[in-house]
Image (cartoon, rainbow, N blue to C red):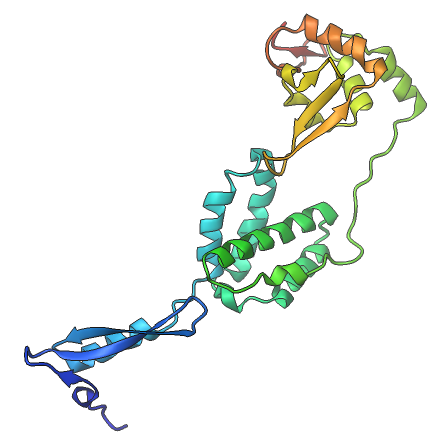
Length: 270
């Protein structure tokens, strides 16, 4: 192999340094037209400096996802992030070493298909797609990529969906009959009348209940910016008022603990 005459590639200045130029690239690896002078007394070393400057600095998915996580995890409810975390870790373990600019809609689609094959349901696979979307949107803002390839990816067909079923009549009658039980019976009645999740009910403040219009406000579990309103139907109003009067403090449902000795659920406000 013929040895490179590095000195002939550059201009030797009067101060004994060789001068060359490196050409600036944007985040999409395209020349910007800008060039910068660079100097060194060793022409071979100058050559390698220029090569390093002009090599595209393409960030990996792991790098971008790490930055996205630091920002995004503070924007969602802790419980939601607990659901996101294992999927983010899985995505990074599978694709983390690949430059984010090299990932395509096909990669995302294959990942979601693999999740379906593992038996994951509609909600979980959709959350996984949301993670891909979030990472790519962040990468666009940092000029790592020009567009979001996940936007064109649809969820796999045939994903399992969870369904809520109405309890049998004997269970419904038991729930209604225990509506005024201040130990525990009121909570199933509250869930039955509102249709909210148990976790949503246990995180409500009394200030979330608007008795003037008989409504309950619930912040979205996905983002603190969203709020939904749940009507409080007439059969729930008197039991709800009695419950709030009997349990002082800011929380609608103070911490509920199961008392094994008594075999009942007790509030810490008792």
